[in-house]
Amino acid sequence: MTKAKEPAPVQVTFYTKAGCHLCEEARDMLDDIAALTAYELTEIDIRGNPDIFEKYRYRIPVIIVNSDTLLEGRIEFRDLAKAFHLLQYPQSGSSTGG
Image 1 (spheres, rainbow, N blue to C red):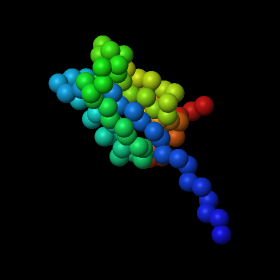
Image 2: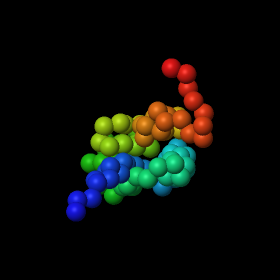
Image 3: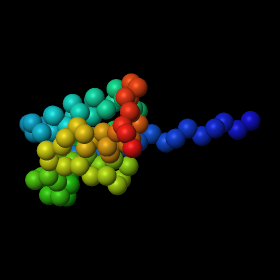
Image 4: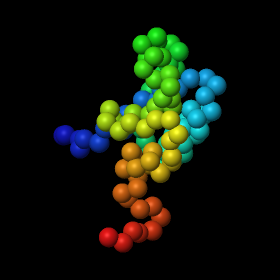
């Protein structure tokens, strides 16, 4: 009768604005992550809200994963993957010694 609960998808908030080349790079990385794992993305253009603009204008792109992991500025794919816990689980048969 009762279904097993599936884990909740990762919640991602992405603060960005048009014309930001670092934001474009971060968005491409998020697309790459989407090929590896499911997540729910909320993309926010900081120009739409003066308070958000003031908070993030010098920090974008800003990616918040599950309300606790914050990445900003020049984001590395490795750090983004770590925020999604993708580096804990080796892919395609590779393993890390431990």
